[in-house]
Image 1: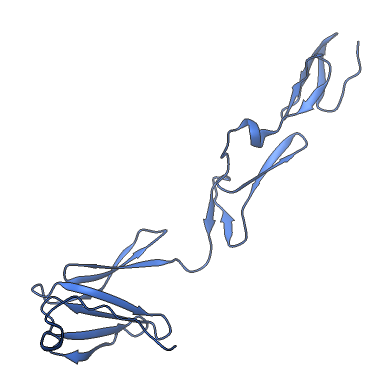
Image 2 (image 1 turned 90 degrees about the vertical axis):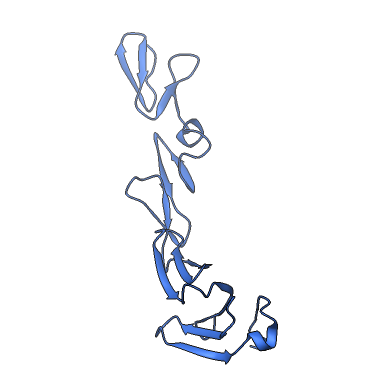
Length: 167
């Protein structure tokens, strides 16, 4: 009977089997570590697969945590949101939760045509096709303010886009 290597068990004389995480080499007497990260396919984990002797594990990059399923990584920290104007509503969509929140609803006849966001002051600016004014809402306090009234007289009701310059 030949020698038994790490990860090997003799099931009967001259018949060997490997423990989980190992496979028999061509000689049939030597067990070799299986690289599960390669064998399981190109993406067994959403980020990093680490092959170890007889096993493997998944890890996540900084800013992510491993989900309970042990395979997927989820971003940690504040959820990014997408600001969207749909007809008379300004909506916030959670990029991970897909949660939809209405930030502002205007008059049904006033379709929002332009939006802008001031990152420093955490304000959303908008105007509408009725062009009654340029307005903003604070993301923190939800306070609404009309900045400019009667925009139609100044813009011919063309869409208005702005940017916070000089910050």
